[in-house]
Amino acid sequence: MARTITHRRGYNYLSRNRLSREQAATINESFARMRHSIREKYRKKKIIKRPRTNYSGTEPVTVYVVLPLGIINMQCELVYSPDDLMSQLTTLESIGVDGITVNIWWGIVEANKPRDYNWEGYKQLFSIIRQLGFKIQVLMSFHECVVDDAHIPLPKWIKEIGQNNPDIYFKDSVGRRNTETLSWGIDEERVLGDRTAVEVYTDYMRSFRDEFDELFQDLSIFKVEVGLGACGELRYPPSFSGEFQCYDKYLRKSLEKAAETAQDSSWGTPPDCSTFYCDDHDYDSPRGTFFLKWYSQYLIDHGVRVLKMAVPLFEPAQTYVKLSSMHSGYATDNQAERAAGFYDGYDPIGTMLRWHDAHLNFTCVEPDEFVCKVEEAGWVSGIAVSGQNAFPCYDRQGYGKILEVAKPRNDPFDRCIYSFTYRGLDQTLLEQHNLREFELFVKKMHGTIKKYEDLILDDPVALRTRAGLKKSERV
Image (spheres, one colour):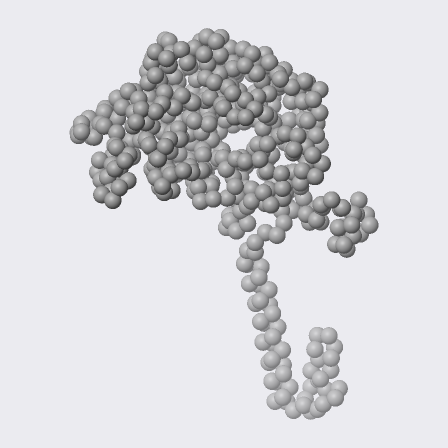
């Protein structure tokens, strides 16, 4: 008689039927195959990395909020009343924001004459921030700022020098000058009184370090971002139709010297952009390749010259450099990158930052192709990568796009950015609904959000009840 075959739940196959040994063996074999297939199915499921559906338990990302650009006026005075500022900062502290970002404007502090630094407004501002225990991120801003709520020019004495010597600014092939920042061609030229541009930047940064040394020592000032070009970013200024910004006499002199080293002095003239990208592929010729490599290398050399001075000055704080990840308005993506100075992509910049113990911050964390390139270049180089938004954001959809870049769902190494800087502190953000959405975003960045908190909208009790949560969780 065949032995009884019992399913794991106790069903007796012989309770109704009598089976032969062959039939029992066949059924046993079927059960064995089924059990094996189930084990394999679940074993494979554990190996496959599924897209993230929530951010609970993810790696924490530090969140900073940028104070309004015009919070310090041209007389280096705090524009906001201390009570109003304290109220806003207290609100940010209550929703979990980690730190505050402050622009330190060269055009304000050293506005009137060389080596005459006025830090009074920043002293008052840092005192208020420090009371709430925030980390402080400062931006050494050596560029002009023109936005709706602020106009901060370069120092007056720099403007006076520029009137007599306009070649201290970048210039394109048709003679348009960009006065937002100084040309890198004067990094080592004594044309700013008795100093080079790098010496001027260094003296300014050293004065800041001496003035706020206590904040560095207790790590209240945790990060310093050093401005290296237009908008504080390491790139050439934007131009029309992809024009190269190297026609001031100092950059042209450098190009001529490089051409002599390459043993072809005819290469010492910048190309004509109207034909450079045409069908005959001037940019891909030996001369075009030489120019593009010189142009991009000069960008890296500028970063090296400034960082060699800045990184030791600001220790133990971390030093960062900002890269732009969006260059719109050009014919092609490659043309955009070449005009900005990224002929060889972003990897050489990441390598340069690693060698000088600096890290990377990129703008426009809203997803696009440029963001992926910059982010990957930083990670491959082994440096910390941070980011900030380019446009104000108040809704869950916008925050979701930022999170896609900050904590990529399908990254094979579970990498994420080191910190995020939010631009957009205003009364709109502080409205109840917008502030609630921002708080959820901060929690997702921290990895502390609970699964049910994604359901919070205008009626959290009703939504949590609908989700079937316990009464103790409905509050």
